Length: 242
Image (cartoon, rainbow, N blue to C red):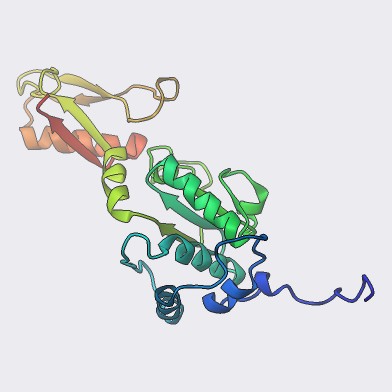
C-alpha cells in the first residue's frame, strides 16, 4: 500500500457525530478498557442525539454507570459537528484526574490549559474544575468586564449536584456578625469594603462602596449588592452568624 493512499480520506473519529458510531471509531490505545459501550450508555446517547440542539439538558444516572464516558463522547460529537470549543467541568481536582484518564483511554484529545490552541481551535476538550469557569474574574466572561470572553459551544457539568454549592460560594460574600458592616448605622454614612472570594490575596483588590446616611436596612443591602455586581461579578451576599 502506498503512503499516499490515505490522502484525501476522511478521519471518521474527527467527523462522526452519532455518539455510538463515534465511540466505535475513536482511536483508543492498546489495552483500553473501553472497547464496547454499555446498553445504558447507548440509550442515553440515542436520546441525547435526538435532542442535542436543545439547551440545558440533564442526564441523571447511577454511580458506576459510565456517565464520564457518555459526557466525553458527547463533547467530542459536538466538536465534530462544529459547535465550537467544548468544556468538561468537575467539582474537584481528584475527579478531574479521573476524567482525564478516561479521555486518554477513549482516545479523545484533552487539555487543562485555557490558552491551549487545541482547545481554542475546537480540537480538544478542556477538562477543568467548575471554579475555572465560575468566578468573579472568569475568563469565560463576567457581566460588566471589558476583557474578551472565551467562547464555548458545549459544556458538560459532571456531578452537578456537587457543583451547585461551589458556584453559589464563588458568587457569595459573607459579612460576619461581629463586623461593623453587619449592622450599619442609619444615622451615619459608612464605607463598606469587601474582597471577592476565593481569589488569592495578591489578585484580590479590596473594594469599597459608600452607604448614605438615613437609608433603610433593605436599601443599604441593595446598594451593596448593586455595587458588588458592578465591580466584581458578585451576585449574592450572605450574612454570617459567625
